[in-house]
Amino acid sequence: MQIDIVSVFPEYFDVLNLSLFGKAQSKGLVSVHAHNLRDWTHDVHHSVDDTPVGGGAGMVMKPEVWAECLDDLLGLEPREMNADGESDSNSNSGAGIPDGADATATTSAAAGESPSNGTGDAEHQPASDSASADTVPDSDSQAPTHNLDTVLIFPNPSAPLFTQRDATELSHAKRLVFGCGRYEGYDARIPAYYRAQGVDVREYSIGDYVLNGGEVAVSVMLEAITRLLPGFMGNPESIVEESYTGSEALLEHRQYTRPAVWRGMGVPDVLLSGDHGKVNRFRRDEALARTDAIRPDLIEQLDCAQLSKADRKT
Ligand code: SAM
Image (cartoon, rainbow, N blue to C red; front, top):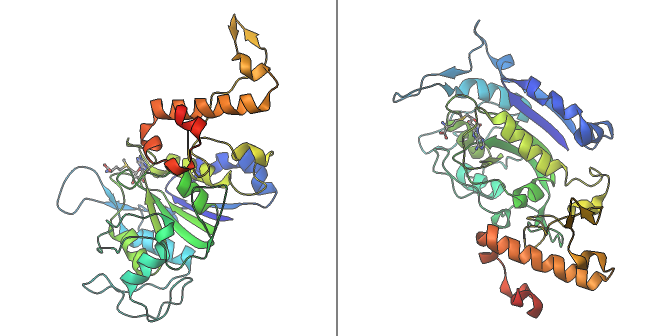
């Protein structure tokens, strides 16, 4: 998987040389390039931001600089948009842009998005709505497996929440390009413009809080996505039974290791019984009970037809 990250602090991503991600790079599973957005500026101050139109505090990231950078990375020619938020010509020869297609409709299909209103407000829908992706059933994941090409991702606290389902889907992309926002964020026309060019653009929040910049959010998403790549984890089994994973997406049961008694605290007897059936039942009951207590929203999303009689007792 090829990964490009655009940031005004590309050094943030030096840590990707460490640990499992570093190993994945050495093994050639992922290739990462962190780009400095300021390399695409032309003024002496290398400015990437300007005051908000309409007034207000803070600064907003300028579309011109982002567009020069993203055009370069995506191999696109600049285009003028008409008043409907559509491209005036279809001359762009960049990847993933069908000739002659309606820009808005193309965007929706290619990105699995609701039709964009041209203001960057379109929220992404589950990939199962995508018309253009090549869908392959994936029994181990919540998300259908799509053979995605390039996906452009902007972290944004006011976007839909990034979930394990998204991580699973994006782990099938050939290339991910991340754009890290700073200040009050980026001009809303940037994602809207690239959607209209037929690029698969996603905006995701990593949680209901506001960070200073997109770098941490990108690191979070990147780790969640790449650890799902075949060969990334030392033991592939370790990502099969995890919280939020599989068709049910429950929280995982609690985990214990040796010693069996530590500071007077024992582990549940059943885990020492050697009876795999009982151990599995105990873990399953724990997963259901914990999910119900901590994340009832996940229980509500459960397909009850998948629950066994024993599950229903829990
Ligand atoms: N004014 C924005 C708002 O209130 O929604 C917050 C901008 S934030 C200070 C600057 C950048 O940090 C954002 O553009 C985004 O890239 C990133 N960011 C901050 N919090 C985030 C979150 N919870 N999830 C994803 N990205 C986030």
